[in-house]
Amino acid sequence: MKLTLFAAALLAATSAPALAAPAPIDPATRARIDRILAATPLIDGHNDIAEQLAEYHDYTVAGLASGTGAWPDHHLMTDMARLHAGRVGGQFWSVYIDGKYTGDEAIRRTLEQIDIVDRMIAAYPRDLERALTADDIVRIHRSGRVASLIGIEGGRQIGGSMAALRQFYRLGARYMTLTHNQTTEWGDSATDDPKWHGLSPFGLKVVGEMNRLGMLVDLSHVSPEVMRQAIAASRAPVIFSHSSARAVNDHPRNVPDDVLRLLPRNGGVVMVNWVPAFLSPARLQWEGAKAAEEARLKTFNRASTDAVKAGSNAWVAANPAPAVTVKDVADHIDHVVAIAGHAHVGIGADLDGIDNTPDGLDGTDAYPLLFAELIRRGWSDPELAALAGGNALRTLRGAEATSLAMRGVAPAMDRLPTAP
Image (cartoon, rainbow, N blue to C red; front, side, top):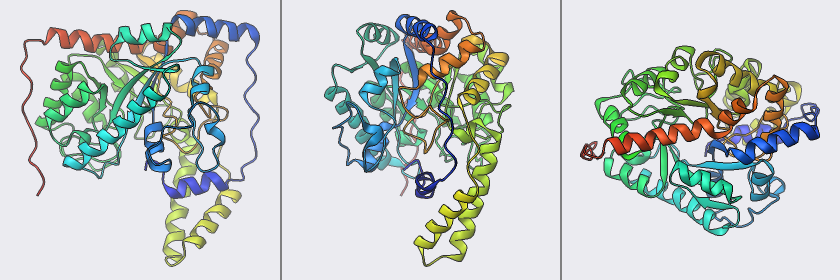
């Protein structure tokens, strides 16, 4: 489960004052956004609905046509109606498993996640269609459907096996995040103790095999050392499927400026996400204070989860979360552009993988609000089109071209020892 039970309880119980809804988009701006997104598919780099369906809805894909934001048992941020309302043209569906799983169990659980995505695409043929290439995305977008791709969120999911990596690609995975929250047997995570000071020799071989296959190397979640080493090693553009700018907010999941400066030469893209604590320094400080209160409550209420929950609710009521808005998202996008350029930024909201969002950006219908904010800041139509999906299409085409150029390279046969 990506969200902690504590975080979910706090979200449900928060009594922070209601924030004003984002200003409505005026008709002229709405028409401009619609025109841009009709010509260029809006491609989001990361959506975790598959994990939510597994965790809370018994793996079913029923009921996703509309209204999931009001489901009584567990609200979702995604459904078919909201995808269309948000003008989404392409979506990388994350197939995430907890990083504690390794080896064959990790492979099996990843297959179960891929099966959810497969069944979802099959269940909503008027809304979704599988995409395997950049040209597929363009064609499917023109048909009015959402081009659906798969992203594997964590290198442990291949179980140390290049054969598993190749089979995941065959099943539709077009990127893999090299780590998740845990340092793995071959790469350091941004949110765990380092072991390799970057990538192990096996990790570098994984990057090479992904290049050979045409699978994008995703550097969200990895340490800065892994970012630098993977960019140096990769023959294809890399992506950050759901990360923001570290200079704007010093969170370990964000991308440092020195790494951003490497992207023009590599051709890669940072797909800025919507996690409030990644976006806002004030929100990050609040999250730290919240975590400290959680630890204190658990220390003094070891025999009563109800007491912990009550104390958590009281703390949140007395300490409302600082507001985070669409302007914070736009600030990160603008910073990536200032350092790397308009050709190296995209959107990876991480919807249904997070417990809350910036005000008003609470579902897959909200993307036009971000475009309206950028228009207010003076962005041009070509710049907005590049952000929406032009840059993502270029990176995927770069991976495809690299694979074609590596046709004569033999598949990597390396594998890690199986744990006893």
